[in-house]
Length: 239
Image (cartoon, rainbow, N blue to C red; front, top):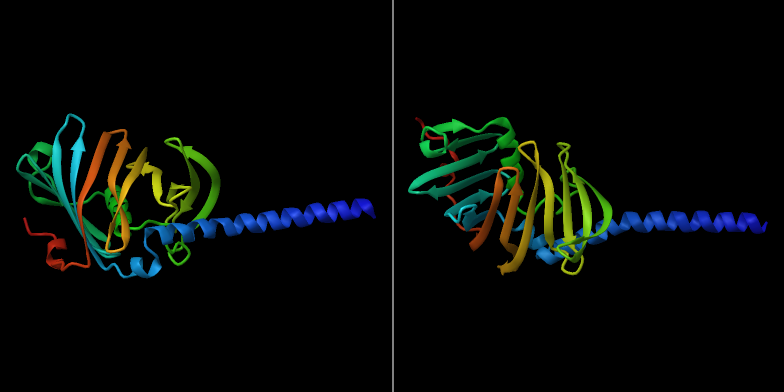
């Protein structure tokens, strides 16, 4: 009888432990959503305009402006030595303009399929953790790790398209500190820091992208929420 009680107690403890573990994922995600500003605030964002400065290896500073209709369309335009480089995602299609100095013709051309897939993921500005169940994503808690010397929760996000993204949330602020994912078929990392508040929503002021192609630092200078957007800017111009 004593042995049976021990076995029962062990089984009960294991069951409760597994149940707590399953709940922990949602607790962490809920705190992440709250840290960003709360679900009501995030759901209220219909358009975003983000103005940034890009610093690339060699010391070049490149101004960039991204205009987005959340979940639908996005246009990112950078000015490089007086030339415009444009990337657009509009629904299930995408196009770009590359100046000759960057291997292009200066005329609009279709985005390659791999770039279109990668850019389309950015139509969700707050990431795959927010409202992840309704998005069809799966989230697993890998554990607690150190990121830049600070405790962070390591969450593995598998999207409904079977893209795997490792996300790390600061264990104190519950804000995103790092992402590890595939970039054009190669491993890459994106780090986020210096969060600032805009209309009650947190945005990272500094974003560092490290990939096999090099390193880019993005500094966010201005965020406009629900400003007017002329949707004609997403339409591919004729050559």
